[in-house]
Picture (cartoon, one colour):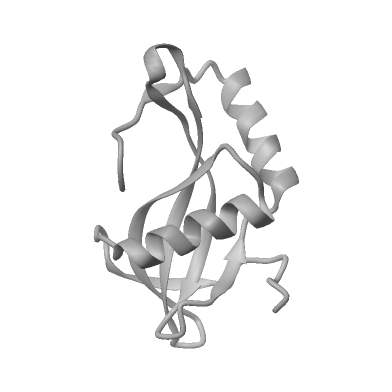
Length: 121
């Protein structure tokens, strides 16, 4: 399956905050590792409605790494991933060049990495 280069239009946030099950969390982690690379963590799931009236899970993509003292560190949200429902297929992921560009923008803006909680967030 080819993932589109442009994000489908989100018309409504149906649920601002939520959780995903461990299996989906693991599948998204593996997808990001295989298609984007290491150093990216999906977080902050929201249930959204797309312009085609399809529901999806929107998650932010955080730029993460292991820092001093074995602490999980994150720079912030640098992109998104959309998971279609009920199929749980990837509808869109921010491209690697765009993720890298957003990381550089955040660094140039003086944003400092922050400690992230272990586990799902």
